Image 1 (cartoon, rainbow, N blue to C red):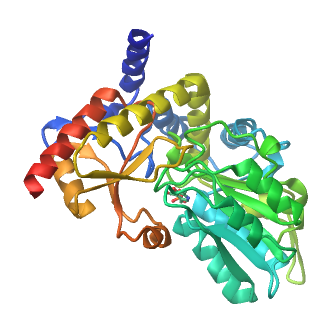
Image 2 (cartoon, rainbow, N blue to C red; image 1 turned 90 degrees about the horizontal axis):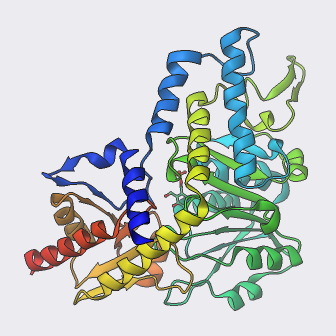
Length: 410
Ligand code: PLP
């Protein structure tokens, strides 16, 4: 089993040219996957092929290239629909990524449905992109922002969440998997409880999409946001899933070409879904590469991805716990392959710089989660985040690197 898996991992790693390089004279160990994953050749080549062979604007031309580009771009929508099991392809809106998707909901749903004294609930675990849009909306509308607290392990306090829910709650917007601590939130329970008071739910699935299969119909979430670049796809591309009935009622987000049906100086009517939310020429190459990434992940298969990442998480946790003076931050029972840690009382940045000299890429800092760091009473953490193409040998290299950092920092 292990031998077979090693063979598979080696074959998989060969598909990533970037992983073959040396950094500071040592083989690169890439453990910053939560920030962005690496891209396999099929994804890289799909971008090259698009520009070499079918570059053309979409949805507009009758000519051969435009039709080819449109077909390839729209195939990404169908692939994304299947990837998250959406009922209809019109529920898939292409965006620049999770941040834009959340801003779209804050603008187009928020400004239509959220009024003074309404309440929006988020959690202590949120990334800034799932905090600031709601703060702005609350400032503009007079609505109130409420925060689900966490326990010291980094798990949501579900009892406190239930107590926050009232008939004033219009929206609950929570992260599915925490980028800082790896906590996997009980998304289905959150959605059921929010729906019981009539609130809508947005799931920030930026970190869920690379680690776990997503089924929006089973979850019954109203909105879901994800970014292609965290799941082996290109940067600057992602989706907003929304239930069709809700999207129909929402205001347009940006205005311009593509999102209109008819324009006169007196009145403009808007295009049907999903184009209503897709003004301007989109990132066509990005969409095509996103499909390549989805196809690639489907080919690798969730069984393999989940099993491999679970082994890496367990092995990494066990090995890091052996290091004297190392404290793991975020010890939720249900965790994805993300390990945040502190080493003695050294600044995470100092640890990160020494590891970088050894060719090991980790993330240091607040991970765009300053309120979470405040709650934990720390400035930031070191974060090693694993993808299915990482290996236990790389974790051993990380452990050696941390021991070296410990000696150097004294
Ligand atoms: N939400 C979470 C949980 C994230 O980890 C990130 C990125 O790190 C984002 C949102 C923002 O994603 P993007 O920068 O791709 O828009």
